[in-house]
Image (cartoon, rainbow, N blue to C red):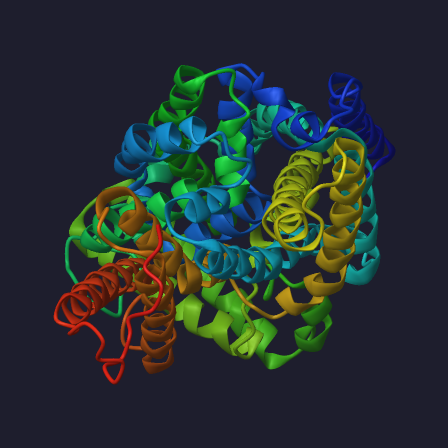
Length: 557
């Protein structure tokens, strides 16, 4: 990067952090630290929710996903508006009326302590694994730009996140998210604009869409159903609804956001804003990736987007084969634009497939999807804009990491330390422990970030990881809300059964991960209902004084 880029990057990140700390300067209680005293306006909560989802993975990996696989990933979000309406109608009112700090605290009020502890532990495992992936994403940035070791990057980013999250709590996290989201939008539009402006004279936005469509990159909707296919219309509407419902309704990193709203109406508006805005935002991110693909039709892409592997193929036969395939594709693209008929479209598509084969041979199976957008940004954006887009990616990583670290600390303090270790301590003591837990989870995130290396598309990896656990979480809350006769033990064993079925399904490799959320939640609900019916039946038929019959587990609610 050039000097101006460093100035823009440092100024942007510095302003975001200092602004968040300034807004949180009066935080001195546990309620203020964990829930901002339930005082935040809807627009701050709404953009914080969106920023927490729009991690660095979104900008780094989603754009690369569109470059490599087209826009069909957008179907992943088709169920989100439905889920947000349901969360607004059923989840948010119950959590706010119960006056809880965490979603899992509600489960003890409804069921029992063991169900709360189990679900809290599942959240800590799932979110604890995911936070490392989120923090690792910026390591990709500086690896491409400077060749820094990814360990250095994760320590630097993790250190900054720990400082302002420990000092300011959820209020600092929310207001930094608010600023970061605004900057993200500006950076995204900048990158898309530069991609179109970088096309040769005479080739405009409409031509770019034609080429992207001809190469299969605008395949936003897939109507053909396949259990193995992760992204199609049915899996997006059904599986996506269940995943989003679990994420926004049961994941503390999201629940904690809308619990900070001034009242229930503010929380609902923030959720419904995301229902309206999330799909257009993701569509534009994916479209940016498709435009970058068209840009590289006329500007030769590298043999591999991973700079570290580029030297392995430099000057080899595969590099010459790659150059020839690029020339053929470019010629086919120009002919398609000149004639715009089916035969030239077929020729262009075949040229693209031939280039994909060469690229796969060059990468030797290594997935370089995460490096596509960063290569474009660092090599083709003008001075200053590179720093802005890198600030966007860093800000996105910081917003998601800080939110997840804060939610992990909240569950650790409220659902374990306060509940099982020290129940009658002072507010000052719990505030101290909350900050200590934040430091722990921040250090843990830095250490676990290395597990994300070599996972391929990070946006797919993090959502697959969530889907391994979200079905169990969603199922137990469905039992809590809609099946009043189900008791604690039935819910507890239902969660265990649901998770067992999810992991077995994953091991078979026969079903796309979006369906894990449907399968898991259904198993939890069915198991909980069957156990309740069985135990209630056994209890009612148990003759007085006959101790030989097995007693049902505790069914307290």
